[in-house]
Image 1 (spheres, protein in one colour):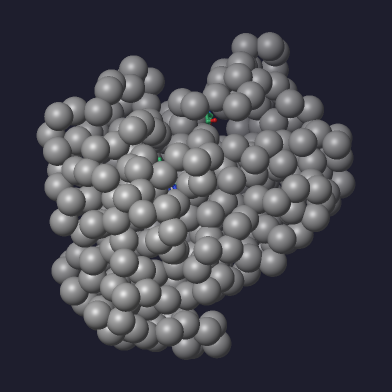
Image 2: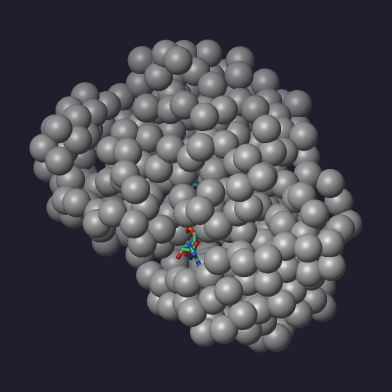
Length: 348
Ligand SMILES: Cc1cc2nc3c(=O)[nH]c(=O)nc-3n(C[C@H](O)[C@H](O)[C@H](O)COP(=O)(O)OP(=O)(O)OC[C@H]3O[C@@H](n4cnc5c(N)ncnc54)[C@H](O)[C@@H]3O)c2cc1C
């Protein structure tokens, strides 16, 4: 998110210093790796709208950086009531989708099992996560941003006139500071902002080999009976690596500075059970595991807001990546004083 904001701010002519405590391309937070799901299919209007806004922005970013970042695969969402909830939200935005009977869906995608109705949305796809982060950073630097990687920062002073950010390579005086520190955000943001406590979990999806190379694999999200944007399983095919499958927010609660441990037997067994039960097109044993961190708010919504000279954007949990271009623009405009934060994302 910080890199997306820097790209938008420098494109608007602002002078930007982009500070990150770890090295460029690090794997300690939530944004690294070869893939993320892009989808328009959300039950909530605001999220569906933000995804619709992000799609052309991803294409614009591809043009600017001269490489593909989003591969269109189509996406299926399945679970109780998805045609009413997700279909309803898509219809409201005029976004095309198909409502498919589970039996017909199993013929179309034989690698998956369905018991409930299915929503197919053709614009969904696979984002190149590392490629996107790199594109945001390179474009920001091309437009004048000063990168400081491997440089831990802290806010040492906030007055009506300025902010002082103390870093390992000296102080930075600025008009506005933007905190996009993911799970570390509550440690950096001034305490009077009363950020919601972030639940930080160590998430470990894994890659499973496909049984039949010819099977068609759209990206997928499987909603359990609880509905809303808590989903059970998700996944996408990554050419050459198999299908990456994860159980949403199933990881252990950790301190973000804690060493990330190998996958526990319990989590591995739960994931293998899920694959054996819902993804017959995959071999039941994974070939490799991914390690990554979620930061989730108690109310489940993102936090994007400004108070005085401090802007904060965090709590993107396991589904923020797809919105990065639109959130980058929103946060940049907040920092430039051009907009107010959407109500749903305000400090509360
Ligand atoms: C396993 C997994 C699967 C996911 N799948 C999807 C998906 O399919 N689709 C989707 O849309 N989203 C997905 N997401 C969510 C998405 O990847 C995240 O919401 C997003 O990447 C969060 O970005 P961020 O910039 O907020 O956080 P981070 O990437 O964690 O960035 C925070 C940065 O702050 C820096 N920092 C912290 N403290 C300091 C300090 N004191 N000084 C300087 N820098 C500091 C850190 O070094 C870090 O680089 C997934 C996430 C995970 C973990």
